[in-house]
Length: 239
Image (cartoon, rainbow, N blue to C red):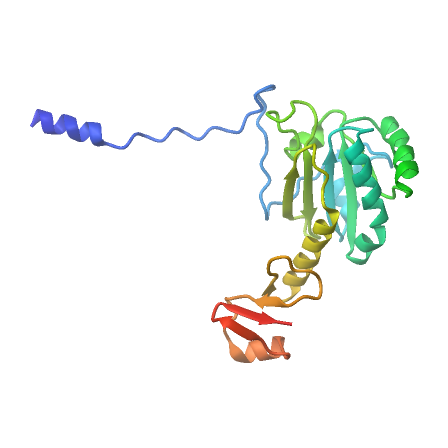
């Protein structure tokens, strides 16, 4: 009996270790993790255009918050220049853009002159001066195992209800695809107002997918008067 009791004890599954907070290995601080659907944290920070309070700055608009490792860096210069050239595209989608770098506002002003000159544009949005890393840490933009002090290329899309709708993280060596960011905004705005989802490589104007949860044929005919093609019962394509 004692042997059986002992072997049963040995066969018991090991206890799970208690989950530990995600700690910055360099500072010991708890790092936040923003998930889709979370409220985007509000903050107040200096910028190239003066103090910015994030939620107030967005108002009833969508927002794109994106970080840069540092001022006067080559990839960031091309990104900011291209974003400035997309001003009309963001405006027609009711999107406000806000960049971030961990250098100061004076440095930002000089860098903006370089961006305007080298990229043949005019930067028309603020760049947060996050010298104290307040926003970077709030949004988990510093990944210590990649670089202990510089921000990675983080992107957050925030809707008018201040909810995080997309997060993308690029390594510092890879420039972002802002056409993809516009594509996702188009998808989010379309799917928020219609009972559809967008398929692989979808672009604005392409066919979409009727969501599987919508099964009432009368409602489907009302919502999609052009009809649909049922490739499978769960895969229904509509113009």
